[in-house]
Length: 160
Image (tube, rainbow, N blue to C red; front, side, top):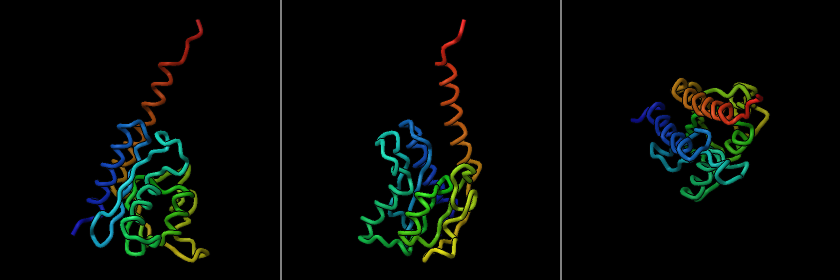
């Protein structure tokens, strides 16, 4: 039986695809009965759509694959802790379990800033597993954003 680490490696593969096209390296994989049914990676810059997050892309593909908006027997693996928008979509799609790699102290809604996914005030809650291959997931993001900052520094005009 495949492990959380195995599926997170598949999400990391998706994140690497995002980085290749200049997107923030965030990847997601949806698993149903031990089978990957959908994948996604960030396409926000490519598509210029706010909602083009890895999780939402994977959820939409899974909806099509299963033929239902309910993803009740699925686990979502994502390299970065879901933001409020993605956490809302996860709850709305009734995903029972979310596994993520790196925490997001600026926008994370699965434990960092708040935990929308386990909030009992909603009609659905998720089991959340955090920190799976955390270092690898976090390093991809750190390196990506460092490269962007370094590039901006190089292109900054000097005052002589």
